[in-house]
Each structure stands twice: as structure tokens, then as C-alpha cells.
Length: 55
Image 1 (cartoon, rainbow, N blue to C red):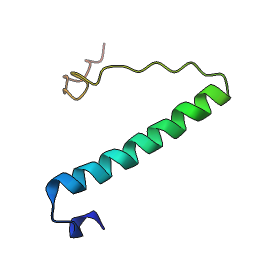
Image 2: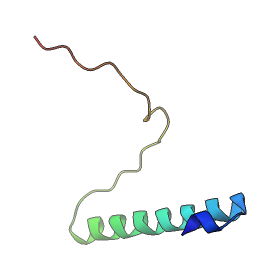
Image 3: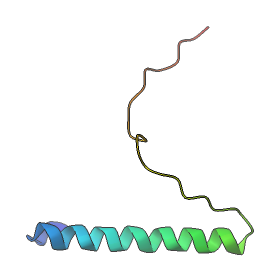
Image 4: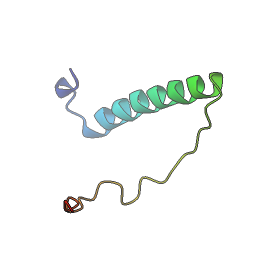
């Protein structure tokens, strides 16, 4: 559906708004159920590391 939107900036804004909306719902339910919410920096979270060796 988003592939029909040709404007790159508008497409990015729509995706970001949807993601932040979902993130807000997760945080809201976490608070509702008493689960602590800690926002972490996404820096360096997408790096690939070698798999652990079997001992």
C-alpha cells in the first residue's frame, strides 16, 4: 500500500507515525500491567556478531 506513495519523505513520515503509535500502545499496556518501561538508545543494535561457539 505504501509503495503507491511516490514522495519519499511523506512515506517515511507515515511509517514513523505508525511505528510510534504502536510503540505508544505497547508502553501504555506496560504501564497498565505494572511492567517497567525503559527506553534504550537504538545505537549499535543492528550489528551482526559471530555466533557463539559450542563448548
